[in-house]
Image 1 (spheres, rainbow, N blue to C red):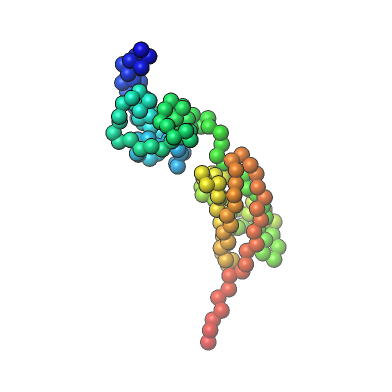
Image 2 (cartoon, rainbow, N blue to C red):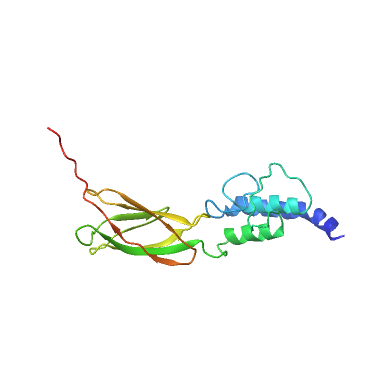
Amino acid sequence: MLGHHFRRFFPHLAIVLVMIVSIAGIAGPAGARGNFDCEAPTDLKDVVTVLQVAAGMTPEPFCMDDATGDDKAGLADAVYILREAAGLNPSRTAQISGQVTGSGGLPDVMVTSGDASARTDANGYYLLEDVRIPDTGRVLLTYEKTGYATYQRSIQAAPGSSYAVSAKLNVYAINEMS
């Protein structure tokens, strides 16, 4: 009985959600899980698609990008996507700080990881906030300064954690051969 009412109500809900998507442009962060409509980014259109599946419909196109890890497309996925779009899901970011040295603390070194970046202070210290943690948990840090060899380091990170990561840069020299 409930399924029958949901099927009757669903087209109206879908229209309202699509209108909200088109007016507000609400979308989750790039790379967010729960892309059920085969189009990036994950947004409220994915909620409509997953609700169609939960109601027993067969939407086209349909891509199985399970948001909750239960290998099913259902209401829990719709709630996850809505929370992600509203910024209410637990953070998938970490904080990374440290010191970059050469023969001492190196100022003005660009430290990057994905979209997060910072420059070292006069003593070589840096702080990267909101470093996005990919599903693999591996975060790549890149250290760059003119006149020095670029250095990259990968660390295993967990959301909500803080890490101290230091690096030593080597002077980049070109030897001319005569």
